[in-house]
Length: 604
Image (cartoon, rainbow, N blue to C red; front, side):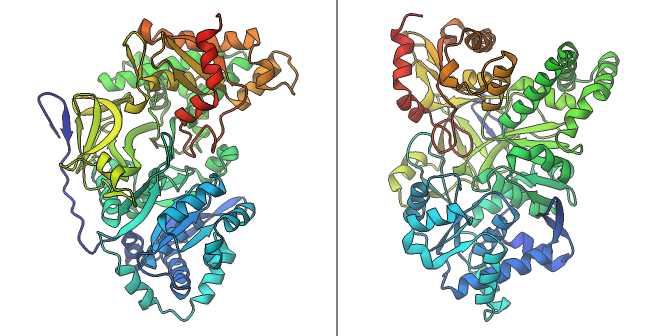
């Protein structure tokens, strides 16, 4: 690790190189050739799971790819992929690569018009799509692709396999090898938090380098992504984080399962019992909040808070050296009383959870480590093929997103913006040279748009440069900290902080649907009452104000939230939220412009 004396740049050298003929599909084909019976995947089978060997997977991929080639798919063609996270999604991804084509994923939660826009912009010549209503809607929106629309299920795979029966394995293999390191592997469209989605072109070299970088990082291959261990992926595979984690798990030789059933995630975790998983901080916040609420409702709030304080103290002591014998004894006691049950909520075997997509609150990170689940917080962008920095098992500094992964350099510009160089940084946006020139400067630095700080080589991300609020008095306020801390409260789902060119800071607050129902029941209010009916209720406002008071105690007076409004409904994916649960800030401010004005014009 080399850190500049000014602490404005941090680099980690790489030992890996990416050969010119290397492509992303090579790893699973290598497993199938060298250890065909290796258990590489697991797929849902009724209420349980069925393991899939490397050879079984590759055979299925080759058959589907043969069908694509028989249908006229050419090397370099863009093929859409719109479906929930599943084993079948991964088969499609690899089959597209095996046909020498380029995967263009889109979220199944996106509106048909948005999906059609992505497929049109990318010039897609075919599309895999989840069946049912989504398939009907996409077919209507993308009429020109009607003859090349395949369903993401066994029936769709069987049809493709049958149509490609005359295509030999050698022919498919030649097509697969036609994609070199410099060939585009995928075009991933950004989530559109600050404008129209842009297509990030990631080459096979980008993806191979990212996987190599992760597995070369200290402790990852030895402790986290370990051969024959298990990983459950439930985040959207259309997002680059879950996709790259899957690729890294494949190379490491893990057994990987997939689910999109977030409503019944505890059952899925209990059934699969993963040792590693991916999370966004909101998932961990909900686990904590639910445990805290159950303790309150059963009259054990004091016990829970004592256990939480012990977990945090134990984690902090690990960072500082070694916990005292007294602290170790307290932790052992609470492990029997509470921590074991919390680990059981993740299946009972979870050792590591990689977190991304948003900053992880430091206290929550300490709590999870104290409970026995190490959360490895990382940071990156679609443009960097996922993680640039990552907290490592032997160098875990809770409250940061870790140090640069091998091959990456992070620099802090004088204005606080984080710049990146590395082999996984994309080559540019699809058909958008202007946006590419704005993102990549003449020296090859990617301007990420995130604000951050470096301390001893560890990166802390403060927020988005475009989101920075400058109050009427000239005070700079990064809203991300306030928003993330408020969203950690059990009653609050999302928050948007307001105050640019305004005299003080205010907030729009969206409630958590499940928590709101619980709150109504506790206060003996009608189950049919909506947020709009109760958003001025004194008791509800008092509960939200209590959360704001706690957060205000952690920031300076100019940064404190002076007033708030509870929005009359919930934030939903496709409207106020992106598919990765990020708030579409400008859209929210436009949608609730009247509420924002009221925060500054109505008497408090």
